[in-house]
Length: 79
Image (cartoon, rainbow, N blue to C red; front, side, top):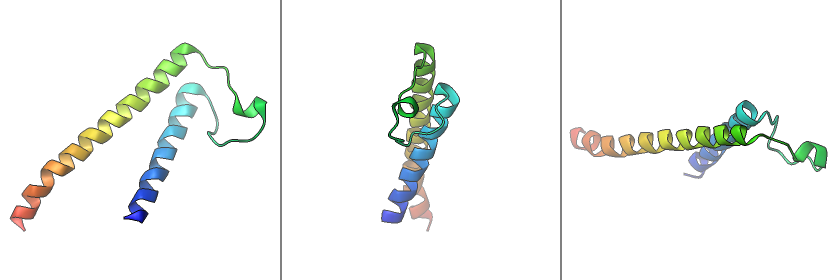
């Protein structure tokens, strides 16, 4: 179970990094201890776009989890 949690956390980190890069043009979410590298000027429309992408990703993940939860009892009954 811990391995699954680590994989899920890693997938989330990758997703957030992709959203930051695609919508906010931030190369990494790692702290680099330099103000010029850790603080960014971003437009409100870029923030809105990033938030929408994160919302959509969460919605998709929730729907996927709900579908898996719904499928499990049917699969167990067939076995």
